[in-house]
View 1: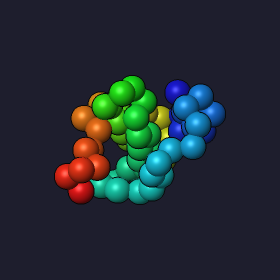
View 2 (view 1 turned 90 degrees about the vertical axis):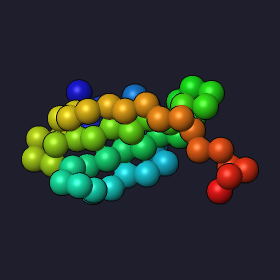
View 3 (view 1 turned 90 degrees about the horizontal axis):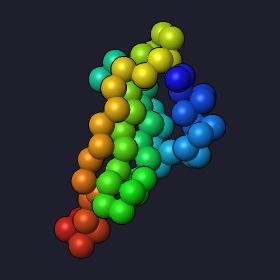
View 4 (view 1 turned 30 degrees about the horizontal axis):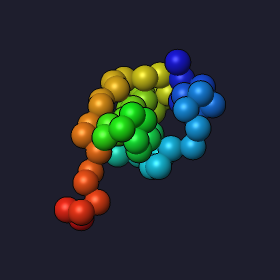
Length: 61
């Protein structure tokens, strides 16, 4: 799956940008309490890794 297809399926990300040599899409609250970060290869825009993160608690911001 490439970056454009991921956006098409998941909707607009909370963050989209370049970081640490890759392109990232971050989606907040894909499940209750879970955020999703997807890293894509810059050249081919193929998925390099997917990471699930505990959602940030706004009371601790």
